[in-house]
Image 1 (cartoon, rainbow, N blue to C red):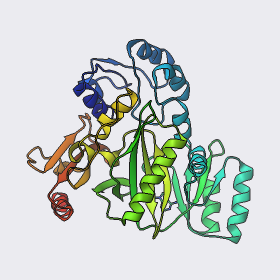
Image 2 (cartoon, rainbow, N blue to C red):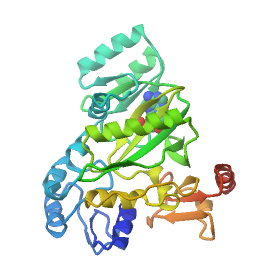
Image 3 (cartoon, helix red, strand yellow):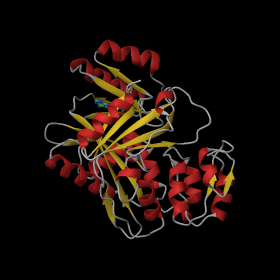
Image 4 (cartoon, protein in one colour):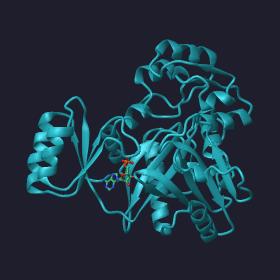
Length: 354
Ligand code: AMP
């Protein structure tokens, strides 16, 4: 993610310094300098501060003390990070922006858990319990359907040092996301809505435009704008949503360019990475029109057969330069373009045949 942001910034003429604990990280290949240090290292953050005019981040689990130290040059601020690092704060923010979340209970103490378990006995249903902090791609999530399963969770997995949300597990028609960017002057702009298909809770494909009714598209865009306004967004926010028969329910927020926005690299007049750099550098936001329908396919460590440099024409392969291919590690993606959406879907399915 950092590398793709840096490539966009490079094309716009900026110099780059990257802070990352891994020497020669993928972003270092396109940066002028790398500070090799842990993400918790406040002194290293101060060095970054002394070298840069504008600072951003590629993932939301940035240590808050470090973010605070960087704040004078971090246009996105640390509040956005604080909220999106914690599902409880995030859901409260979404509701305060008058948007829907699934029904949930915050579990911040043993007493909360006890009360929830008591209530659940009288109303057992399918739920997913998620750690409030630190989970991604389905990690730290426990799905259960009975009071007995909840008891087992409490005995075996519950960690009293952590906080959780217990969400009703809903049946939805589709998952979609809207990426919204905001600049320092208060301009806001959304990218076309992506329809997201997950496999093992990891994004597998994004189909753009999303195959949903116009009324839902409008609700999705309006919801993203409303949340961005509430946050006084500077930078990029990915808003992940469930689509029900007639509405959208907000699942989660990511305060950065997002995997479901990688299609913008080839299919939009401006990519999410360029727009992000524009947003934090207080440039006017640019045209984000969709120029072609697109299917984005994620390439994971085990997908050797997809890492084919011979793709031409409408198959655009992006590799992230990660040194080691591990199972389920995101190594790159392919954007499949076409004249029609059906063509993109058929071509993407052909590529996916091993
Ligand atoms: P998350 O980490 O919250 O994005 O969850 C990962 C995936 O789990 C989502 O993309 C959904 O496919 C599924 N999921 C998460 N929460 C729920 C829910 N409350 N009801 C149904 N499916 C869910």
